[in-house]
Length: 177
Image (cartoon, rainbow, N blue to C red; front, side, top):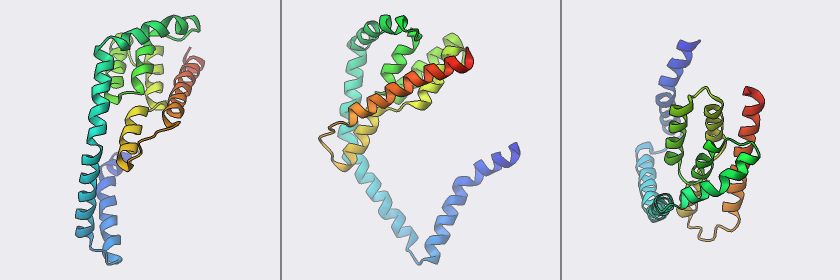
């Protein structure tokens, strides 16, 4: 079974591309021209969202290196310690909404410190899988379609992240403690 799933993994993407080409030829679609047109649209989209991405990355770096990130962690830690949430997860909870690579770095440090099979490692893995990089997603998607007024989207995204964070801790403690 493992060999079969490994072979499927190797051939899934080339097989999908082949099927798309065959369907395009059967439907008499100029496949190459459609591909080039799609690539040009993707390039234009990348150029259009670039200022938003640069603004977000600069903001995240200012937040991290100005000391504001550590100040937020220090303010939140006593409350979370009081309710029984491991305080080592606080930086992950804050960084996850901002940056995927930053949160991966924090999880890597937690794995190095506690191990991936520890309770903290399992909670960190679950948080990583059940929350999203809300501000990155909003920046890319809203920037791609030109939405300037986000209205309630950041609040809803952050509420979803908080729900994922709390649920991850609750379920991991329920299952692994």
